[in-house]
Length: 420
Image (cartoon, rainbow, N blue to C red):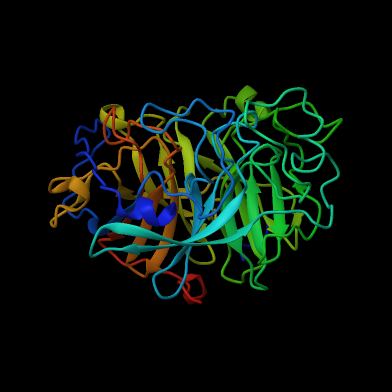
């Protein structure tokens, strides 16, 4: 291992009602110096890209949001990037949860702007769709051969023109970083692959496979025998301050590690100049039943990791952010980790977000953490549109954004602070 070098507008006017969180947390430990919630806002559930194609033809929708949907929902935030001036880029995942039901969901990066005074996040624009105009992908994609060769299509759905826009049938992006040269890197789960695009979302090279790791959803014909559970690829991917070295992190445990009684260990790789280096570090979860939410660097060797249980609402108990040290000073192959924020126990003196004096974040998928300044971080959830249950059994999940003030400042490298 090397050194760690509206629609949308209409939706915005809809009433936004967030139920109270839950306070019970069997994992809680006494902490008199808890983190403090200093800002909160939410993007309404039914926010769609203006003028976009309808979607959800392979889904059943929900009691409150029946399918098909009138546009492309702005949802499923699985990665974010804070820009200077208060805007955020947010990346949607594969759409509606699986390869089979997301063929009509166009993979996209959006721009949003949270207003912490009103508690309402505004949708600003579709920045770009991911696409492959240069035909770097060597297999059939949905919007160029996949749809036309499908045996049957849902009622009302018509195959789109072969424009090579990528959909949730093709890939499941779960992490995103911007390189020093302005190009984008996406970590995804079907391969798992790394996808490299320009700042318009166009692939610059073929998908980069992970050495020795294959998911059952891998689309490459004649691929290796799967050894990673479905939907357990690159949920997190950090980038070093130099803007050139990536550290993609698997959400799941590969079969070889599970067989070696390492069922709580997640692998962290190093990728330089688009090539995987030999070896990997390990991150040990507090429980083998937990999942990775996000993973970002704050300097050349420290990172933030979201670790969570797979529960929501009143059942949610473990939603935490750890400070991880990737320098591995004891040379045991594992990163060191220190609890930084318990998202089920955040001080809330202003009683933001419909919570009381203690703020809880009981969503099943909390998948975004970003640095705002040396002592403030932003956290967002993936609302799994059109899911319900995070804030109440009959409350549609929204995309919430938290700004959390830490008890002590972090040692953030200036190049990793929001800008431009």
